[in-house]
Image (cartoon, rainbow, N blue to C red; front, top):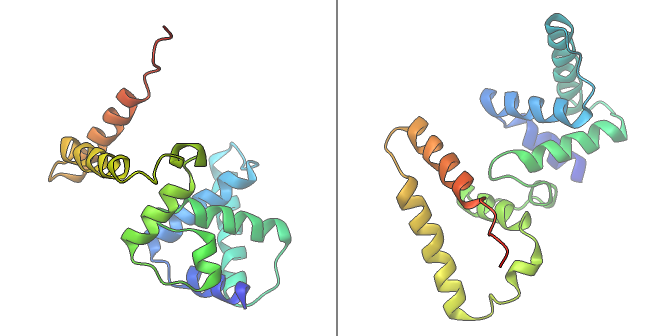
Length: 156
């Protein structure tokens, strides 16, 4: 039942999502050839394995593990939702995926309503600062803003 849900999910990916998925699967294995021709051949082998899986063929545990890891890396997607059959909106799925990657120690104070409100303001302000109508500039602004935030605090 769970594997069928994974197959259905993969079958519904559009071409660009499938390309991203394939890249994540290749990255998971970390054994892609360096040579361009060999790498293209390897990519096609991975695509064939994925198509076979979608069409019901048995696959190895390592392939399934790679597929689940790759699903988790797709924007706004996570394996648990896919396998459980939960249909989340892309916003809910993206939020859940982002929150799952944050260590739980950061949430120990989130029972306080003021802290939750400040967190929401922080997210909104961050997006407002970075926003641009042009996608490439929005992405560049997000990247620059994140790099700025990653500056380590100096130790006192």
